[in-house]
Amino acid sequence: MELSYILNHLGEEKENYYNAVTPPLFDTGNFSFNSVAEMRSKITNEKENPYYTRGCNPTVQILRKKIAALEKADDCLVFASGTAAIAAAILGNIAKDEHIICVKNPYSWTKKIHNNFLTKFGVETTYVDGKNVENFANAIQENTKIIYLESPNSITFEQQDIKAVAELAKSKGILTICDNSYASPLFQNPIEMGIDIVVHSASKYFSGHSDIVAGVMCGSQKMIDKLFDSQFMTLGGIISPHNAWLMIRSLRTFDIRMNQISENAKTVVDYLAKHPKVAKIYYPYHADNPQYDLAKKQMKKGAGQFSILLNTEKLSEIEAFCDNLKYFLIACSWGGHESLIYPVSALSESGYYKENPFPINLIRFYVGLENPNVLIKDLEQAFQKI
Ligand SMILES: *Cc1c(COP(=O)(O)O)cnc(C)c1O
Image (cartoon, rainbow, N blue to C red; front, side):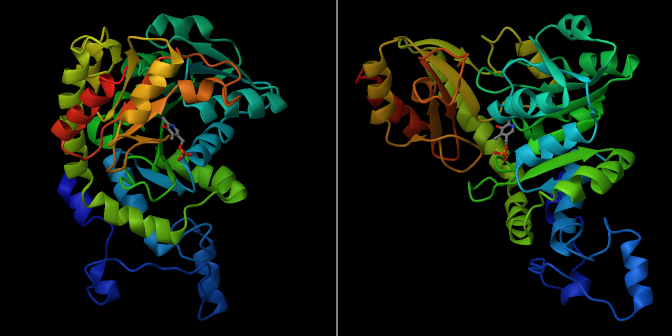
């Protein structure tokens, strides 16, 4: 399906609401019926019929259609956060005492789902360096049910060969889940490469303005139907109609935003990669990346996130650099209009990471929609404070 059609028209039925150009926000929790027979007919397919907003809301339905089409999936479900979508995807496909293989250094709360939550049910997780497909093959046990990918993964952005891992998993009857938040469906489509379920933090690029927390899960019709009746409805972590309405608005500019962010990030990365005060840069779409060929194979473009190692491990110098940046806000998350830095040094003493696996001089960047030349000027003056 053509991209601009998906973003601007798909799923909208203007004739049903006075030909309003903007779809209405159905800010209601409940729906009523003219007869018992009508109520009975609606409850038989609660996923598609507005009956109660935990299951189906017309505003959320529009969003579901667009996101499923973007990920080239049969269907999708939208959640109150990315973490809720990830938890539902895993819980819906795992039973007591089964085993999961997960890529090393996934998003921090994904790791906590595995380490602090699933362990209560005897579910064990083996973390593997995802750069090599053989590491997944070697970790497979008789009770392995899920291979969990995040490509590129968080903070250091290593990639997995998505197609190769999907083929391996299929040959062993193992389900694959891939967190595609980094690339967004515009730059990478894991379902086309054989992945069973794609999850996203929609708080990031789908939202695009740092004003929504939400998550999505995409997959086959059979999988989404199964998860609707189980984890989605029973755990109830749904998006609000208002946030769905905001996200529909955000999607109008999805393509434009992603392309501009990609270009801006490239300009800033090229500057940083040559800078004497930068010891290393982690960006999937840069020629210095040992996995650059894989990036070109499975991702259309690089997105806005990357990390650098500063050429100093002195905390005072790292903090001087960060504190002196005027355009880059110090914050977690990413995907909005505003450029950000997320310094590992802020976490190191916070107890947030029990065992922080990242170097103290690592700073994750997100480049948003500001003029990249202004961002470079900002970086240059901050480097001079070291
Ligand atoms: C932010 C993030 C999540 C979690 O999403 P929330 O919407 O914050 O719950 C999951 N995966 C990745 C890669 C993320 O960056």
